[in-house]
Length: 318
Image 1: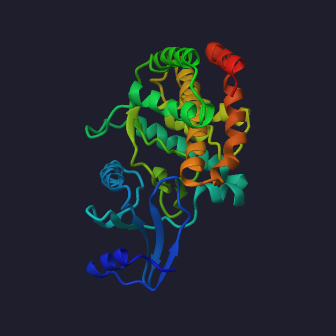
Image 2 (image 1 turned 180 degrees about the vertical axis):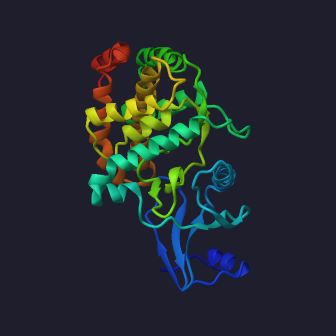
């Protein structure tokens, strides 16, 4: 595997010797990942040259998580000017791999992750994170309108106005209990690793948290339990939701409303993002998850809280 001259120059400057380079499957971002190894160790080289701010945010968040007792990748070197970094390799034990190989251990991995989210929800909020504001909430919803519903079409002003009114009300409902925690945002099975030699919440390795915000604790939970990359039954989802609630005495009856509203908003955002990746960057691999995403969306819309939103889809289509 060949790497760019600029990366070679970076490695030479920090005197990092390597024998083998393997490019890893990229995520939905513009970052590139390489497993870089020599006879002594293996690390991950990240090329964030097209997203330099994301590297700064990742480092800041990684340091906070490590300080608070979570397993984030150790960062051995970072060049913020070039956007390159070398960090700890968590290996190949991603949940997405293990869920296929070790189906019998799924509940163990889910329950451990719920312990992690419960622990995270009790942490003092770091001052450097921004809130998951109504503006961000609405911007994410706009991905669906811009890239899925009305792509290459003229938007109907009445439809959009009705959409915005519905979601304005839902946003208020979702935040009625005013619960706040660190929300890691991309909390799904491709970003979680089982680190078998560690104990407690440290058994779960976390990555891709550079977009973290201060938001509602239901957000990461529903990201995990309504992950479009894997199918779990409605019964199992409810069981795991109840498990989380049982671990958090501060939760009241409105939590389940917050859970389904943030989950539905997230599903709608994902549909738009998948289409955006296809149209802008030719990345079609995510379209395989669209049927599961739409299935979850339609299932959520049966909840009475979405009476108006369900009517919107009935009237104007998906």
